[in-house]
Image (cartoon, rainbow over all chains, first blue to last red; front, side, top):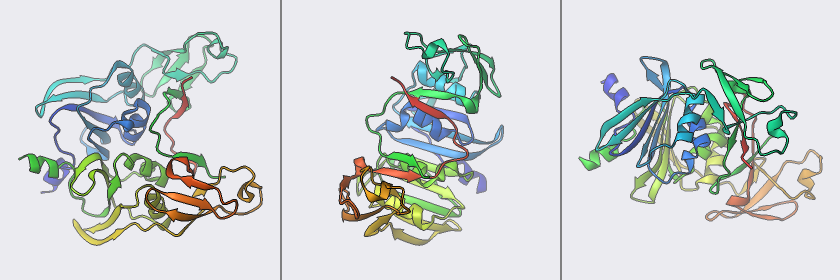
Amino acid sequence: MKMLEEKLKIDKIPKGTVIDHIDAGYALTILNLTGLDESKNLMTIGVNVSSKKYQTKDIIKIENVFLDETQMQQISILSPNATISLIENYKVIEKKKVKMPKTIKKLILCVNQTCISNSGEPISTEFTVLEEKPLKIQCVYCERIYKLEEIVFTSKEKKGKKVKQRIQL
Amino acid sequence: MKMLEEKLKIDKIPKGTVIDHIDAGYALTILNLTGLDESKNLMTIGVNVSSKKYQTKDIIKIENVFLDETQMQQISILSPNATISLIENYKVIEKKKVKMPKTIKKLILCVNQTCISNSGEPISTEFTVLEEKPLKIQCVYCERIYKLEEIVFTSKEKKGKKVKQRIQL
């Protein structure tokens, strides 16, 4: 009975995408960063779910949505072990592991103000992935090295942004 | 079968809180604003779920967590129709509707720079609720009126904040 309860916590979807084996606690960040949080489609999300392989994990199921290349890269940076399954008629028709690119272009800012990517010239940011887990990336221009928690992501402005927040003093 | 699939999308929890009838698309904002997004407990979230009463809705189930008064108020501002159920042994032991307070203290900033609440004096913000849905609140000091989408919420700094984001130019 316990196992059954556990298994049924999030159910199958007829068509869409399942993002599984997300690092525990990163699902909501992924939704925000990829812009999936603005979708009008049915989503079910599990956070801190028990996992045989990684103790705990997050999982996202989203109906009628398939990810683009940028979204896959964003997920690979935050959760290099994530898997993406494409669903049709309740069945997995394709399953793949996210793959971190060797260089990450445009998705991340270099916070070094003297870096040429911040000079106002039309130069897009570019980082070389030195290590995947724990993540270590290096700006190809100024050679500054960043860990995951130091990264500043770029993100598109959201039209439907629900609330504004300011940190309490 | 269709109905069964629908019903099982998010399953029962043994103990904790179910926040139901959240306005569609607001669950992730509520998790962020209340700080529940930093919980290490198991959470299941449904976004844009079909609902008889309101067409679509969001729902949050969180194990072993019970909400405090501030969190209940934050939810009432974003989703005045939300219901909160307390669960023990898979059963609802208490169910209540969120109740919007007549005055909202501290949770919202007045963005009017000449308002006395922004003078540096130790004066907390306070708003009178003029209308609940659509929300209309008024600053008790400068009398400026705000709609939901104009509100700037205060929020505690999060230690475990996963990523920083900057809007792409």
